[in-house]
Structure formats: C-alpha cells, structure tokens
Figure (spheres, rainbow over the protein chains, first blue to last red):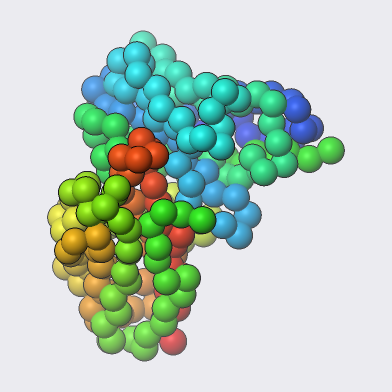
Length: 120
Length: 111
C-alpha cells in the first residue's frame, strides 16, 4: 500500500525558514517523480515544485522560485521542501504527491498534507 | 488566475448527471497535453479520478468519465450521490509556462 506522510508544518514568522518532509512507503521511491502541491485557505490547488526520480532535475512555480528548494533522499525514501524567505502568501496546506516517470504527468497518490502558517 | 478555467461551482440532485468543464489554450490542453482529474474533500488527501484524459484508476466507479477535445476537457459524473460532494480539479501541463497547472477547481454540491 502506497503511503505518503508529510511533516514539518508549523507557525513561522515572515522571512523565516522551514523544511517539510514527506516519508514514502509502498513503492519503488527512486523510480518516480515527486511533487509538492499547496492549497492556501479558501483557494484551489497550486503546483509548487517537482523533482525527478534521481533528484537531478528540479522544477519550480514562479511564485516560489529562488526561495524554495526541493530534494529527495532515495536511500531513506523521503522527499523534502526547504522553504526560505517565507511570506504570508505561502500560508497553505502542503501536500506531497507521487508522480509517474516524467515531469508534468498525473499524481496518483497524495499525502494528507501539513499546514504551514506564515504570520507574525 | 489559472491558465486553465473551470466553473467555480455546480450542483445537481441525486441520480442526475453533471459535467464539469476545463478550458485551456493552445499552450496546454490544445498542445496535446493530457488532462487529469482529482476529487478533493477538504481535510483529506486529493484523489486521482481520471488520468490521461479518460482513464479510470482501479477502484474509481464507472460513474466517472473523462473526455477531451481541442482546448477543453470534461469530467462527467452520472448517478450523482451525496458522497460525490467535493471539489474537483483538472490538471495539465503548460508549455509556455513550463509548469504543471491546475484548474481553479469546481465545488460540486449534491442537492
């Protein structure tokens, strides 16, 4: 059974940093693209970032480019999102999702999400 | 504002059929990129409903079906049930943005 469990979300001040983790199990982690998607309060789903199976290729939404960094540890089946220079508009539930072999394809399993609140 | 547009809300009575549209452009859906659909009940993990325009993953009832034509795609739900009340999102890829894009989402209410 595929499972994705996000952690690390909390209240942080504007300008602060946070690292989210997503522990994966039930599939060959290194084979698949992994993605972070967020949902701000009262808003829809927004793609944030994607990393290739090997970790060598990364992609970012313009809204987070230069501030967020996605990475993965294939030896521990864990996905990360390093979030720096956080802004109020980054407040959202952050979901990790399992993709397919290529960037931009569908996401067949999602975690329950972790809440990040950026506020003073 | 998303480059892919969905109606913000729709409603239907139990047993009825509803169709949710997803309208894009020649830089995404019209550029032959696949459209995928997700069901999201707030507070839970989003669920894949349709992949590759029309393919249902194992376990998704055949009451859900997808189609695509030109720069648009649709999700049809037949035999509407109370459990179908949720937010529905389409997702595709935009070559101009070089990014994954979601539609703005459609809140489906079962009357």
